[in-house]
Length: 253
Image (cartoon, rainbow, N blue to C red):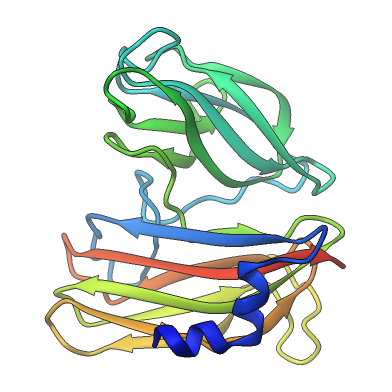
């Protein structure tokens, strides 16, 4: 499988992107599925569904469940949030943690792409769960779990003026028979953006009750600006574990 990936044109370009392009690697994980009977997002947030902010943007704040995640603490000291602003332009902001006291953004966020710990204390990872949520304790939009340094949400929104070529995607499930589906807000005919409607792009069905992995290595689809892309799981049992992700090349449209 490794040789096949290395010979794939899109993947090879992603390893050495042309000028102005960048490699995208989206990682998703859910350590305890809730067995809702329908479907769940693959992320580490507190709810089965990861909410999408309004297109006009939402004022957000970052906060930890531990007082050790602070400017001079043993855990996460600063956190970087990569997001789309109200115009759909990709931005990155560094916030200094203040433990269990929320630190607020000064601008509205349209979509959260991911967040990660930039600097840490002696613990080398976050001590508590670090949540990016609506201000004044509202909905959680992204989370770095305790003992981690990056959020793991299998979602991405293509920035304004860009296009994303997804080269491959995968999933790994522990002891559950599930259907894992990649979805995007694009028309089935001409790939025009039809937000907020998500259409299935591909399906990986895992039918064994043991731990298993499936990988679609020659996906090769191009998504235009402001399209929302996600991977969800159907049929997960209570307490199951699942991970998923996709890779691609982000270029000017």
